[in-house]
Length: 210
Image (cartoon, rainbow, N blue to C red; front, side, top):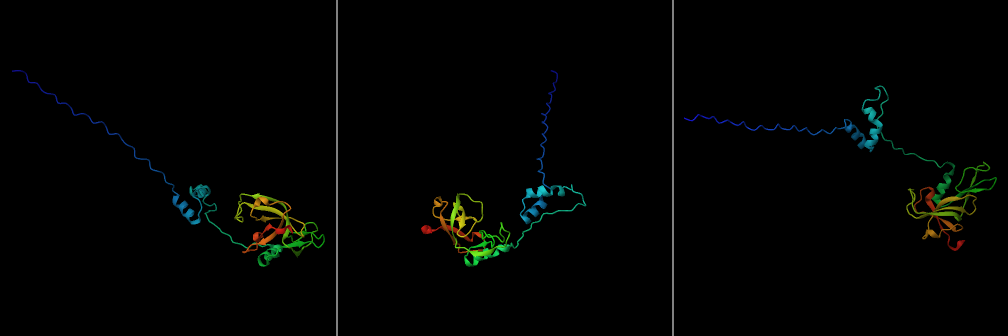
């Protein structure tokens, strides 16, 4: 009889070890996030500004007995006084009248008005002006950063009102600003709504050149 043979059993294939996948890194959160959010929303302060000012405090870097500072916001409403020039602005608002101030010693007339003469140091007195004058110098402004200016281009001019010895820097309005020239005769025009401020009036060319 032929010898018996024994079949060798093959070992099952080894499974490759599973690769370990690292867990996604957790995004670090700012431990002071809620503090910044609270004050930012309460006072409308940008978070970056809060971090700049208060990061050391929140990180515990300030001495425990040092004065503690916290964000705050303050709005101030106050009364501003025109002092001895007050009548000038009241006359604009109430009576559409431009006043100058006159020195009793040198007889110089100022506009804008001055409570005291800058040459004689004497108290001045009020004088009424006609509102007519002459352009001494002017320029056309095509851009403006002032909240008072609503229309561009506009004319900024130095004007000497009749009967005065100083120049008033003010605005001119005309259909064609490019026609503004030194030597042009102008007259003050008052706005319908007046508030007791220097922009209650402006100047336009005087028809007829008188």
